[in-house]
Image (cartoon, helix red, strand yellow):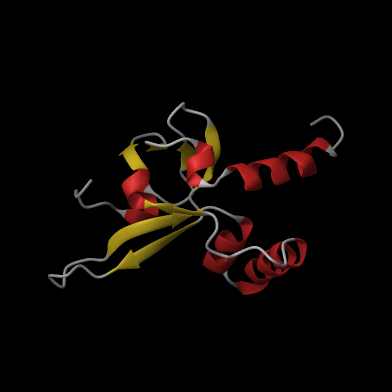
Amino acid sequence: MNAPLEIGLELLDKQILDVQDFPCGKVDDLELVLGDDGRGPIVTAIFTSPEALGRRLGGIVGRSMVTVWRRLHPNKDPHSNRIEWSDVEKIDYALHLNVGRTVAGLVLSESWARKFIERIPGA
């Protein structure tokens, strides 16, 4: 996966699917570093959580998302929804992982979201 990408168009907000094509969230933020040869930036990890999305959005909406997420998850590591770039198999209509959602650490967020959504009438 060394081909250049138009990050804003090809990665951000893209659906994440695990090795069994189960939806695991969306790409909310990226970790970028400069390459050893000075070229870059190079994507090293992706993040998926309301906190990561809020940091990316900024402004009052973004700060509110981060604040609410941190209040609901006071002991959660902000990097816990980090997926290593080496776990990405391919990119097409979605970002496909070569690991399961439990290995990628995406089960906790999914179960939390499911508990919240189940409370909405008609969900």
